Structure formats: structure tokens, C-alpha cells
Image 1 (cartoon, rainbow, N blue to C red):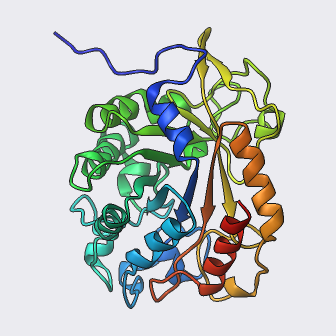
Image 2 (spheres, rainbow, N blue to C red; image 1 turned 45 degrees about the vertical axis):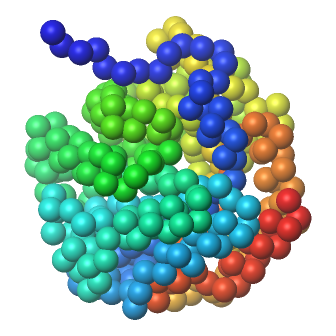
Length: 330
């Protein structure tokens, strides 16, 4: 007998997994990868794997900073739109295994999280600009490829994973991504993992794009439709929510409770990856950032602040200092 797929249960109240996520409330976002060594925010999958060559992977410094700032979890980029994988995988040669530093970054981060008592979340781009299956054989080639990679990340080798942050969804429609299969797979492997897809709220009109701006987090209304579903929480980086943030959204005529996770970059200009010009950008104001975090927390939502490791595999000291100033004000 065929087993039914795991799916969210319609409800106007948070599930236990959502309650635990809301309690975590404050986390560290870590963008690090081949883009760091290409000095770009996005790349097209053509930067050679050998170009990725950090001196070290100081994941302990990353996670210790999160711990000292009173954060409760980190979200690590495992694969950005370029397709470069940050863990030891045989699914592709575009990964750390075939790079200038073969360290499994997910494993190093998981070890540090266990040491400091911090929960681990993972970012994964649905869009992949390097995998040939993506363009040549999306349904029967890329979808299984993607599910195999997610299985590696979620099968327990890295311990408990509390969050999966999915991105790059604008390149295909919800139906093409087969999000129901992703949701089912992840929940079977990590039942407590909360799953979010960037650009969650919007009209499901089978367009491969981000939602219209009327669905920005600050404009959301109770009962708005969900275009990226199944999901456990809402995302649209780097936009903030508002006071009175609504939590009830609809999909196929049923209502679902979804909290919001807001992303904040450490520097003005919303720079995600470190690059040679990164430190020239001014740091975001500590008081303004703390005030924004307070508002989000009061709305029973979640905040992640992005601090990108540099080419040496370490967080920038000025970023860490500003993070501690924000934490002190909170």
C-alpha cells in the first residue's frame, strides 16, 4: 500500500515544531562558498572548484560568536545558486571534496554546534546553475539529484537539523519543484525540521518568478494565498515584517499558521558573501538593528543576522563586534 505524503495540518494555531522555532527566535546566517573566492554575490557555476581554497574552516569561531551573542541557532549555506556543495558528496564534482580545501564544512559546523549547544539549520538553493541535469533533464534527472543531496544533508550524519531554508524558487513554478516530495522526504528524515521557501506568500499562478510586491512581508494580510507550499514558515529576504504581522494564510481553501523569519545583513547594501570590497561597506547601526529585532520578536517571529566568513575561513572581527553591540542592546 502506498504511504500518504506527510503534509502540514491545517490550523490557525502553531504546531509544536513552529512553537520551538519561535522560541529559538535569534540566529546567525552564514554565507560561505565558491562565491567568496570569486568576489561575487551570485555566480553561474563556472568558477572552478579549485578556486575555493580557504586557509581554514574556523566553524568554532562562527558558532562561538553566535553563542556569545545569545543566539540559539545557525543557518549554514550548503549550496547556493552556483551549485557548489559545501559537504562531502559524490553527487557532483562541484563540491568541497574536489576543491582547494576538502573539509566538510557542514560537518565542522555541526561539531561546533554540538560543542556550544547551538541548533543547526541549513540553507539549500533549489536552483542549480552547474548541474547539467537542471537544463537537460529536470524532471527525471535533476529532481532525483536534488532529493539525493537533501537526503545526505538530512539523514542524520550531521545530527539534528532544525531548519531548512530553501531559495532560488523563482526559476521554476511550485509544481515544477515538487515541493510536496521535498517536504515529505525532509519530515521523514528530520520530523522536527521546519521548512521555509523564499517568496512564500503570493498568488499561485504558475509563473516562474518572485511574488508581486503586494505580498511583501510588510504588506501581508490575514488570509493571503501561499504560492510556495508546503512550508512551515514564511521567507522573503531581506524584507522586514510589520507590527501586527498576520499569521494565517491559505492554500487550496484551507488555513495554515505560518510565522515569519526575517534576514538582516551585517553591512549596508545587503551583502551576503564576503568579497574584497566587503569591509568598505558600512556596518548597520546597532540601535536600529536591535529595535528592528525587538519588533520582530514581539510579533512572535524569528530573526537571522548574516555574517559571512572571509577567505581565511573566519568571521570579520568588526562584524562580530557589531553583533555583540546589537546583542547587548537586546
